[in-house]
Image (cartoon, rainbow, N blue to C red; front, side, top):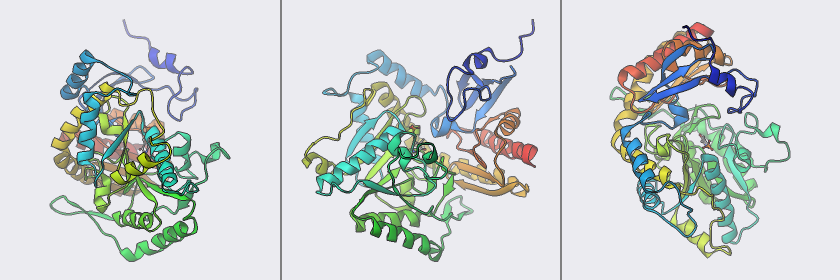
Length: 446
Ligand SMILES: *Cc1c(COP(=O)(O)O)cnc(C)c1O
């Protein structure tokens, strides 16, 4: 008997559960019936089934693909010991091992780790930490943050306050967000890929001077109010997939030093090799004071994030009135998540150096034909991230369907169709993704 049309699951979902930034009566979602390797088995709202390569790696997370044997067995082994215990007064091997690993690979000397349960919460903790640090140094009046326009740092209140004030959510919550200091968005980078597949930045330092001057003058004006500089290093993600020159990050480091501000880098999207360096801050040879990580930390298996900081900052907190960093989530350092993160880091360390440039080279080559389309204004690739920018907002529904017919799952936003493939994609998978994006954009937007 033929199956009735429509997906029963999607119909039950609609109007019942909210999806990210989507109305309750929005389009029906695709149902995931399975996920293995880099492929999702999807059931479309009209009932049709699709096998699609996940070009989004589940929003930067699933770098080793789905049902990865090493991650599966790390999860199973920890499940057979214990899944969760409180972290107050208790500790466990997965958390300590993970903290040791993270401090060993972090850019610059990082000596302390705070485990949080999501990226946004880690940003909250980093901001709180900055205020506590300044208070501990006798400057309790320093309670604001300097950041750049175009950023995205999460959806909780303090994190929202440092998101882009126009494209972020500021207009939805007037009066409820702390008022931060916004420098202009750093100018766009020009990247060239050398014949030996290294990516090189072509930066005209003169071009950066007006931007740097404005940052310096804002920091000067607000120096007694500012606790820290907060920024996504080199690649702004959800705020527009904007790539900017490493020199700008160095300027922010200098400005932070001049005014005794902490430099907080949000590596939640960029960490673990995605940009072609283990951490994007390394493109600028910048050692941050505070670093937030999340997303790919557990290879996409479980929600886990962390804040890393230096001995200098840790010591200041310990000597302060409260002595502790004033935060403590219920699911702090969840053992299952930490065990999977340890396994994921082992895979990352073995693979990112080869995979990120390989994926990037294939994306560069196979997204290039999009340059011939009238609707396309820019194509950029940094590490294993590929972006096609259009002259108009993407018709998300139609581009999604057109890509699915080509075997690719994408989730465009604004004027951007982009991909950050799982590192375990074969060359053919990456070609399929790039061809699928070019084909879908061409079909829908010509
Ligand atoms: C996704 C993201 C966050 C928020 O992380 P969640 O886990 O969604 O709370 C913060 N900063 C950056 C740069 C991100 O990409």
